[in-house]
Length: 191
Image (cartoon, rainbow, N blue to C red; front, side):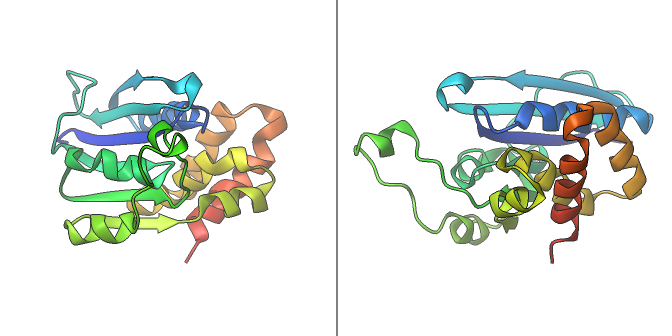
């Protein structure tokens, strides 16, 4: 199998590292060679965080270059747009519609860009956008956005749902397990 590439992008503190760990674990259990590379950026100050997940028969490098991502999973809509050049032609974006103001917007130096989902679609990207915060809140905590996104991402894979659920069980601490299962199901079943 040729190598497939997934970028998980967001703002520090949103749970992207757990999402990449869980996804990497799931792919390993399915017999793939997997490489995960975390690029933290200014994660502790709300800055951009990027994780590369690459899998296939044999993966040589953990890095994804411009135009190579099969999927961009985004915790924040501006991050989707920021990393759009990395999406390959025909690739898929799965994004939360949440908007988190970057520092230039906070200071008033810039305005938050409008209509980003529409602009990405106009640029030729396939965009699956949804309000993951509301679904995470419904599951029990806004911190479960990561599992809502993974639930949505699961639509684009042929793995049975029980494989995803097993990975959640093995990667999520027991006291948060039921909430995260609900978040995954809400993301997966969103119409």
